[in-house]
Amino acid sequence: MGGLRKYMPSTRTTFLIATIAITGILPFSGFFSKDEILAQALHTKAFSFLTRRGSCQDGRPFIRPLLVWLSTVRLTWLGPLIYAVGSFTAFLTSFYMWRCYFLAFSGEYRGPESVHPHESPPVMTVPLWIWRGCRWWAFC
Image (cartoon, rainbow, N blue to C red):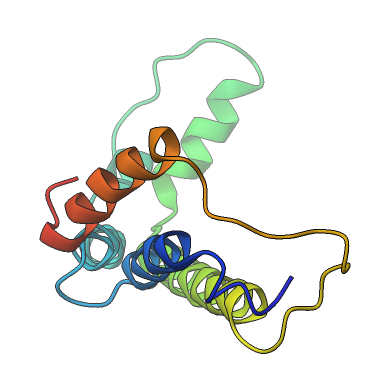
């Protein structure tokens, strides 16, 4: 790998746009989805059913004490925890994608001399170009 920029320009451009999109850079589609998911995680009320006050009507011996305990615990820390884990995961994904991009397409070609890299045929590149356009305009 490495140095594939001059051998595979269409693949390089498509991979670059995909890397930018998954990193979450504006105006690409990854920004809108990642931003919204993390914002919802930080300000969520989705776990309020676990902190609901009231009587537990379940008669099973193991479940009832668990439900009684959950009805007394406040899980206000769960949203920020999910936000922090999601942000860290997004950072790791971005780091790995940029690492993969630079290892594959920059520098000198480090593959065996007997292998001659080439661009994929149009049957594979045309759908990637369509997908690339969707990433750019944030429709997909």
